[in-house]
Length: 88
Image 1 (cartoon, helix red, strand yellow):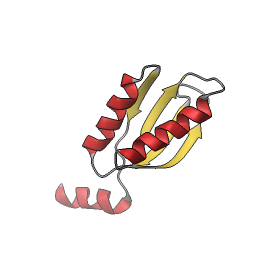
Image 2 (cartoon, helix red, strand yellow; image 1 turned 30 degrees about the vertical axis):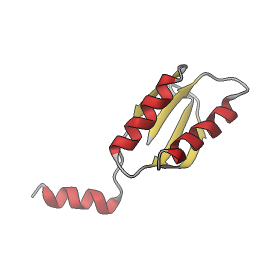
Image 3 (cartoon, helix red, strand yellow; image 1 turned 90 degrees about the vertical axis):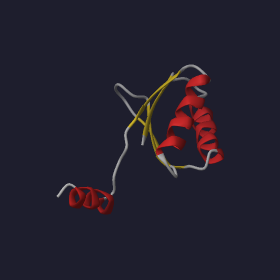
């Protein structure tokens, strides 16, 4: 999951669409974009084949300026149960 901070203005919806297209072009998928109040303007729920793809998307987005990202790696129940099993 990537948390994206975009300047609030009338082009925000267009930039969210551009982000969705960027993620898709790099092999990922945006499953949901939520506009929020508070510290972050947008939360984008994304899927990608690996962490490197997420990092590449973040770097590409940051190179365009006007954006800061925070990435959170999430685990579904099956993945987390495997982690618990591995820990002994």
